[in-house]
Image 1 (cartoon, rainbow, N blue to C red):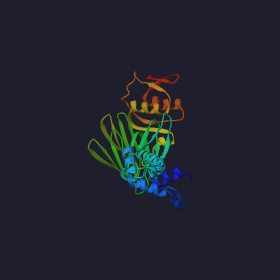
Image 2: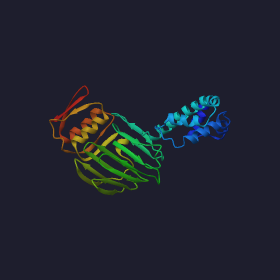
Image 3: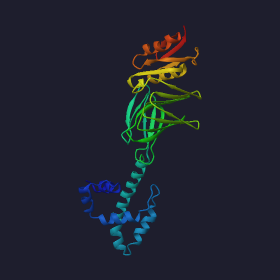
Image 4: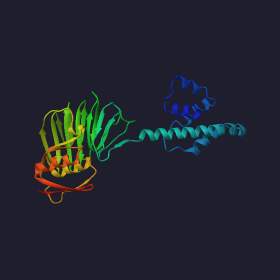
Length: 297
């Protein structure tokens, strides 16, 4: 292993026994330790090169000796500076996962909990700080399977979901916030209130109005298997969800989108999806390229 790689792994406390021995056998091992002690209070990115160089120069009174020591120490200082910068950067960087229209993906959190991220959604968390900061930021929709005994908060623009060993779905779109518990217990915080949900229970805040209802206890939301389902949901949110799963734009200006819809649509067949929505509401539609117009029959 290269000298610089050994130093970087040593800075990250990641040397195995053989690498530790190789590190200790470096010709400038003692110099590296000495320099590390000298910059023990270093906090990236405020590394004061001039100040540390002056400190090093002061340790060597003999000019010839100083020149002999100065060049290798300068190289060490550069490696240490890079190492500290890399360490600082990687330990403050968040993990961001985004899906586009018609795309779903699976994410594993640092505690082995899993997340199914629905289309046109984003998830953010800090992997390196997970033990002290168990916050997951969500925009869109996701289904969480939490590892037994683990706890974290799902933070959205409309509310916070606190969990402990459970399975639940969170949906946060513009004007729409919904949480459904499938296993265990979840606590939902919104508008200064906290509501607890047991399996089969759902709470939704739609256009600022809280709605709580019980449903059939199932193992997961239907969108996981390619179908979006709704119970008494304003049509405008159903149309918006349809746009999340098909690459198209829908014009619904000529119809009443505040009408409530109960039903579902598939993610795999556009015509079938449109019929599933329009027929129950006595609506019709026309297609032109990637544009759909909804109208009354």
